[in-house]
Image (cartoon, rainbow, N blue to C red; front, side, top):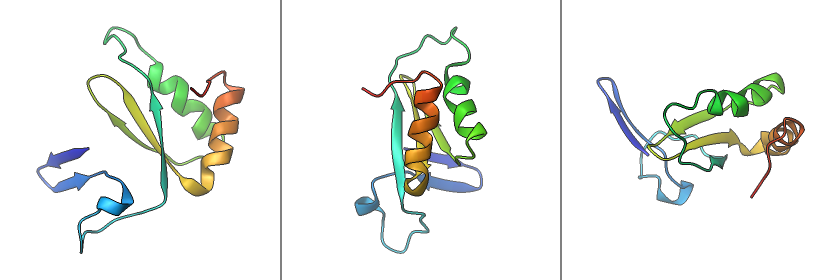
Length: 92
C-alpha cells in the first residue's frame, strides 16, 4: 500500500522489499478481511477490531476498494487469533 498525505509518504510492504535507508517497523503479521464488501454494509471492520482492542492487541488497518487488511505485531498474533475466534471470526 502506498499512501501520500501532505506530510508523508507511507509504504506498507513485505520486510524484504523495504527500501534501503527507509524508516521502518518490521515484525507484523497481515490478516485479510476477504471482500469485497458493499459500501452500504456497516460495522465490518469494527466487528474485527473491537475484539482485538478488548484483548489489548495493537493494530494497523488498511482499506482498499475490495477489502480490509489488519496488520498485527507478530508478538501479538496468537492472542489476536484467539480473540477473533472467540468473537466468531474464522480463518480461511
